[in-house]
Amino acid sequence: MKRVVISTYQSVSGTGVKAVRQLENEIAGVKGEMAYPYPISRNAIPHCDVFLENGYTKEEMKLAREPQKILDDRTFSISATAVRIPTAGGHSESVNVEFINDFELNAVRKLLNETPGVTVQDNPDTNTYPMPIYAHDKDEVFVGRIRRDETQRNTLNMWIVSDNLRKGAATNAVQIAEYLVANNLV
Image (cartoon, rainbow, N blue to C red):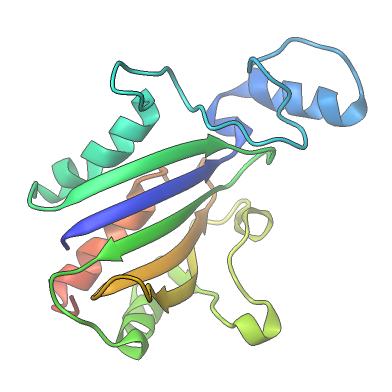
């Protein structure tokens, strides 16, 4: 890997029960305690955790550093943006990975299909792709929208979803990247 750009779309349960209550109250039209400085229902808040001096949030910096730490590899860079969305559970990620070497999309799909714990849902013709509603209470990581980035050589785009109470936000992307690298596909 050379570079990874991750944008996460994190459910309110990642903030805790107070945030889940806020979402439920807003949907029901009930005024209540606020976990966020803004309404979350029918909204997206680009603010997960506290802002740091560099303009990133603590969560975004964790997303950028954790994969390097887990892989014990600081030779690739990661840029992250974390957004809170109005779902009770299930985190989603738009992941853009630039590799040093080129790859075949069919080989990537085959590898992902054969990876334990990963379920590929990738058929745009039938509107088959991962969504938080289908990941709820499941241990699998769901991957879809697998395609080349047509603006950058050797670069792959994916949409990844999992139940955040069962899998961590950064774990999904790291496990997939580890497998691709370990099997010399990238």
